[in-house]
Length: 329
Image 1: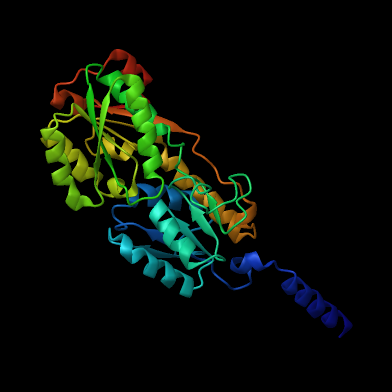
Image 2: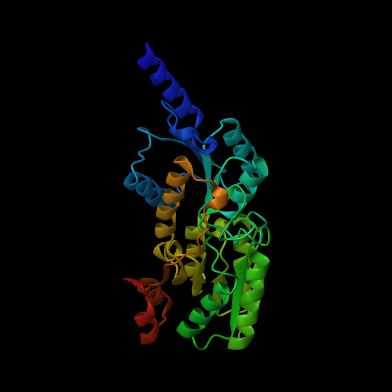
């Protein structure tokens, strides 16, 4: 009897000692996490697959020892708050937020459920974290933000590929927080490069045709696509319009280039989404998001589509081909 009492006492003490952040580790509880995405699971596949692979490498397999509640807004940003609220009601252990709009919706829905960011703008500038080193709130993970100056770097690479261009259209989405500062950096870089930068707004795919018509009317020689999740979602449409109008373009991610865009420069998203799984694993094992430093991307890629260049009648300078991390033939 004494032995049994000791055993039960030790068991009770162990249960009481479990930190509040380790709900997913409690006996018999399968972790439930949420994913709050943009348009659809299909369009998110280039990002979902490395995330699931990262989880698998850490011992988490969907449908076996972890449940993922997938929620997608169907390309309608106004649906995100309701979907975020739904995940909160489900009392998931954490929510993965792959973009600025999804992070905003989830942060407005909860200040307690951990949020793992994978992309989006600087969380400090957006007020989601006190600092990258010590976030202090319920959001951590990775930021896709390389600083607004990255748009200037993209413009510089575009100019290096097409030295004769003097007029460049900049397609941007003013509805996304952080994009205005990115556009300003591109304008500063344009002045230094002797380029006339012409901003054009696009808040949704319905604005694309009108934007391209304006680009042609203004006789822009090339296009800079400012990083935005909406553009990532409709990357194939953008690449198709650029090809149709014989317009060379610089994009923020290699996914655009693989869908027919001329060139891209940005963070390696495959690596970012795989690394996001590490944050999920640590939080499920009891770590607090407030104490987990937010990472900036460490791997960057210049990708050039040689097939698209040939179709546009463009000869890529040898120096740019040498600098490229990948050349699509």
